[in-house]
Length: 160
Image (cartoon, rainbow, N blue to C red; front, side):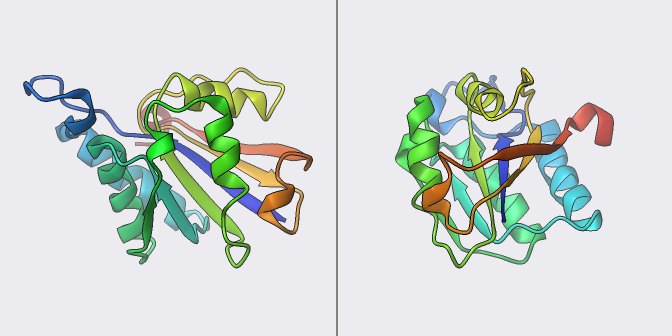
């Protein structure tokens, strides 16, 4: 059994005159990212592998989670910035099997679409939302054909 976490980046700052890729988190985004990571850790969740879009807001969110879980090894995947649905699947099937759990940090609208494609529910990800899926497989390469169960969907406004 594997566990997949899908995390939309925390709230970003629109006041800076910077390209979309370089937008930082705003104050609430920093607070929510720290708080959501802490909530997961304190409630017994475990994340072994951290994979992020290289965009500043996603990578910063990922760093808060990795730091909270005591892991500084973050893999940046270009395809998770402005991703297509298949970019998520292609990323998951390449995760090293030594990890029983992995978190992907990315962007809307595609992260909502991908999460919804894994369940019968329609999931709309506000910033810093986290979906947790149990994936019935021994190897990440078996992800596509494996049964997936949404076990949790955390929204910052309900948690923090």
